[in-house]
Length: 93
Image (cartoon, rainbow, N blue to C red; front, side):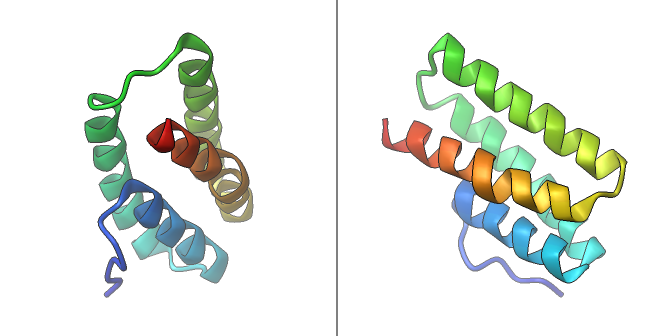
């Protein structure tokens, strides 16, 4: 069983990256579900400008596409190098 190191959205998504890079497909599914819920909750708490929202939506669409294609390396790359840094910027702003 995969245990979350943290309950923060970025922490959950970082664990998705680890699971994707190690081929732990069960953990990917569980953690992505947990991450989506965390993202939804966080989005209601932070004001977001149109450009940032556009970038978040584009990243999420790409993540879903990679998940559908079962391209776990690309999914991990998008999360690690695009979405998580964007998310952290949003949370600091």
